[in-house]
Length: 307
Length: 310
Image 1: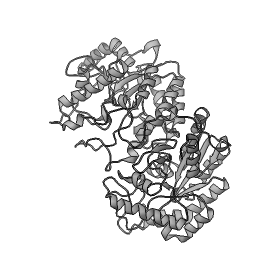
Image 2 (image 1 turned 60 degrees about the horizontal axis):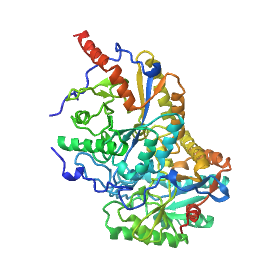
Image 3 (image 1 turned 180 degrees about the vertical axis):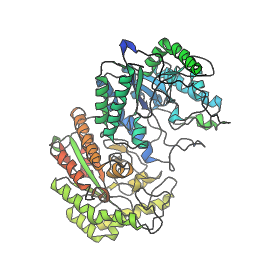
Image 4 (image 1 turned 45 degrees about the vertical axis):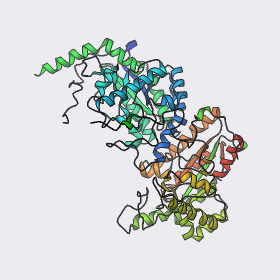
């Protein structure tokens, strides 16, 4: 039976929370999450969601995503280098096998790798618990094998979820999920094991694919939206301590006609003094070590206030 | 609840691509290319001359920008036809003024129906490529190979007759292909095609009948994609093309020559309120002295000569 609520987090009003101060007294923790994905040309058909709109070969859909790896990746990497940003990669982990050159380049830069499933054409829908656990474990093992680190974070492949996706990733040793869009600060997440686990703001609104493909916005407007989003979170961060994430895709943001707007936004954000330019793992670690317990307490206090 | 075992089996999980069509290669790792006169950017303007039949079958899907209303959809038929009657002449005037040469991707059915248009193109002498038989004659996954072979046969034979050109280039209607399209194109003497949008530079695409060149022709930077699919403003179209040009020009400084490939449609950019934006783009790029204007075949040739192929 379907649930009314995912039962992953409690209501927690943005006001009256403990203030977060990021390392160095920063008001805002900023991270960029490049999705580095592999879509298969001819995947098995999931009965719940079609990977491609028409019969295979889906030349247009497949080839523009391949563009991201062939052409776009090197561009975005150079840009993040220029502004001193370490990417936190949302990785289709089969890419370690297909395109190890990309993995090596990112390892050289000490970027973070987190799991985005095995392929972005293999959805969670319909998997049994055992199957989903196997898929998640495969992705965790692959990242460990190729990078020497277990992933701390998870974003379900193609944002396809089950009711226990977050539980299973926590049980595989994870620390944070990117699958929830309910807040501008990290929040505690309930997992069935009872372990300490958090949600990090990942932002669909700043996501280039949502902006360009779903909302169809103009590149320069995308750049402006990013700056406006930053301005407000930066100002509020003096009182609350905020997180800003830009999730990207090399086949969207790294197209030649979109790079200028993205670069201007990165230049703007990193030009501010009280920004902690960080990664998903570092933000999650810092929060778990310094604010998680206060947050749990504050959520309980808020729940009692008008009870 | 569970899925078949094959859902967790990954038979093509290996180094490189998950198919045999082309080899894996990052653009940033490839040798630098230089264009004639050491220009940084080779500009390919691909003008699509299209015929959208009124009696559209819509099989296996309705072609984007085709008929959408109940038959007879005079509105979309005539608005697309506007491009071939009126819009084209504004575009030609603009390109000629800035001395940028077009390559014409022609639906063969249009060539058959419009002797004046073909006569004009032949007189100009620009390169003509085949854009399929017409916009409703689609190539698609699962298509009967005999049927597709006949379609390509008809499209190329007739266009070769009417144009007097050998016709080396191909762009599928809606860029849609079957599993067999590349083989059939190579067997019919096609040397390059532009359906796959996975690169900013040419690369070699394998078929059982010999290689094709995949020539980059961005879909994301196409006039109809920006203006009609995304509903961006006319000014944004010009901004996006100029921003792309600036970016590629900067990249070319360190990585060798790049291409600006613009796919345009007279029914879209040839409208009175849009043609000025094409002129703005042409004014901007030709003011830089970094542009080499070539036809698709000339750019392909310049590329392959340096790579020791062809």
